Amino acid sequence: MNQSMKHVLVCAVLAATSAAWGQSSGDAAAGRSKAAMCIGCHGIVGYRASFPEVYQVPMISGQGARYLSAALQAYRKGDRRHPTMRSIAGSLSDQDIEDLAAFYAAQLPAAPPPAAAAAPDAQVADLLKRGNCAACHGEGLNKPIDASYPKLAGQHGDYLYAALRAYRVENHPQVGRANAIMAAQAKPYTPAELKALSTYIASLPGELQTVPNAKFR
Image: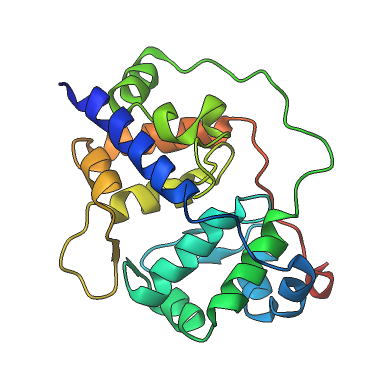
């Protein structure tokens, strides 16, 4: 069995397992009142983080609730290593996480993204095929096969690049992401290949956006 087929099977198993966990129990209205710690970064268009490098913070409005919940839990547990995010996630209860996830997931664009997307060049097409990214992240990398997987289309390219490289980091106390599936996907690529993938994915039409908070308009 080749690596691509193994990846498809693993994604299918994880999706089936995740489906058994049930739907999000978050309250979007409650999440709005709990988002004060989030809006200072994720509520400012073009805001850039400076650790471990400079990149635009990810767009989380329009992202799936189940994915956002899983990401915050991973920061709280330390599977995703980032001092600021771990501090924030560590201050949240399980219900806080569900409410915030529901709040940001409900912030979808008024109009759906255009259906057409620019075709990748030959290099990127080969990279996408090798990684079989659509097996988990779905059509256009915007329709994950399970809600606990992220939408990728249109996400900031510099953030995607930093995130992909984080899966390659091992044994660092403040940087890295412990996810065996994504580590196996990211490690075979060179940094230049990860950069090319990230740049292309950022160009795809998607539902992710930054919704400016009224305090920063």
